[in-house]
Image 1 (tube, chains in turn cyan, yellow):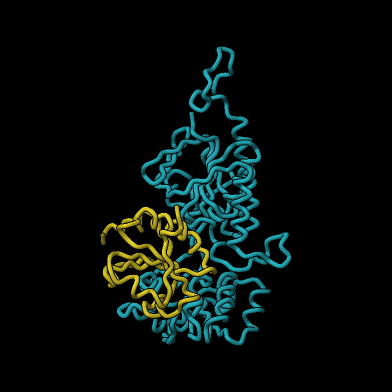
Image 2 (cartoon, helix red, strand yellow; image 1 turned 180 degrees about the vertical axis):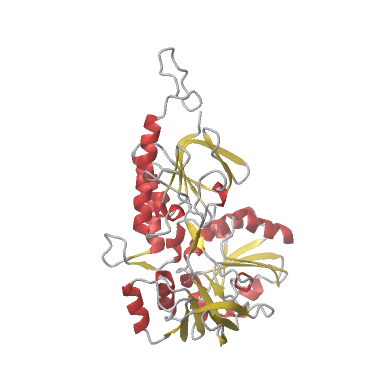
Length: 327
Length: 107
C-alpha cells in the first residue's frame, strides 16, 4: 500500500494551489517543500498582478497566505530535500534526505525554475560578493554605488527599477537592440533617469575574482565585437530561469530546454505523474498561471485516482472474490 | 525550540560575543525572503548546539558596521567564527545538514 494517494513536490503557487485543491478533494496530500520554499515569489517585493489585491501584496506574504490556506484544508507539509525519485514502478517512490522513502499513487511535480547564471565562471565565483540573482535580497548593499542589471525581460526591468532605490546608477546590459519586457515595464524603465542601457551586448567577464569583489564588467558588443569595460560595484543577473528537472531526467519526457512536456491538461508521459507551474511552462511563467495549472493538476490527479483500479498494493483492505480485477 | 538560545548580536556587542569558541552568525533583514527560510533552521541549530557553539543573528538594517567590515554583499549570509577569527562562510540558502556540517568541522 502506498503511503499517500497524492504527493506534491514544490511549494510555489503551483504546488500550493495543487495542495489546496487536493486537500479539499479529501486526498490528504503530502507536500514536500524544498530549500527554495515558496518559490520565486519569495524573491520579489510587491506583486501587483495577483487578482484580488488591488493595491498589490508582498510576494513572501502572498506565499505565507497560500501555504496557510493549503494547511487549513489538511495538507501535510514536509520539509526535505529530495535526492531521488522512482517513477518506473508503482506506487511511485521518493527518497527524502537519503534517509526516508515515501510512496504515492499519484505525483504532482511543481518544482519550478531557478535563476539562470551567465555561464562565464566569474559570475558564480563572485556570488554573494557583488554578483546576485536577487535584487530584493541584496540591493540594500549597493547604496550610492553604480551597478549593472543583465537581461531585457520583465524581471530584469523590475530588478533595475527596484535597484534605483539604492544604486547611484543602474546600467542595463541587454544582448538585443530592444527589450523583451512588457510595455508598462519598458515605459517605467525608460522614464527613470537613473537607468542607462547598453544594447546588443553580452557580459564577457566580471572582475575582480582575485580580490573577491566586483570592480568592473567587460561587455562585448555582439554586432561589432567591440569590448568595453565598465567600473561598478554590483551585477544583478536576470536572464531567465532553468527548470528544476534534474531529478526526473531519463524518467519523464523533457523538452530540449529541460522543461517537462505535458499534454491533455497537466499529464506527463507517465500515467499518474502530473506537472504544473514553471517546471512545464516557459511561455507564461506568471504566479496566476502557475496557480491555475496547479489547480488543473490536482483535478487531473483526482480523476486519475478515481479511475485507478483497486490495486492490492495501494488499497490496504483485502480484496473480496467479487472485486473487479486490476487492468 | 526555545528562542532564548538564539542570541542577537549588534554592532556594539559583536566583537565581544565572538571572541571565544565557535560562533555562527546569521546576517539577515526583514525584507529578505530567503532569510525567512533560513531563520527557523538557525533557531533549531541554536538549540541543538547549545553549550557547544554560539548561534546568533544580526540584523543588517539596524547594524550596518559589522556587515560592512566583512564585505557582505548579499543575504542570507552565515559567517562562522572560531575564537574571534572568521573561519567559514555560507552565502545564500543552505540546508540544515549543510550548516550543521560547517559547525561540526570547526568544533
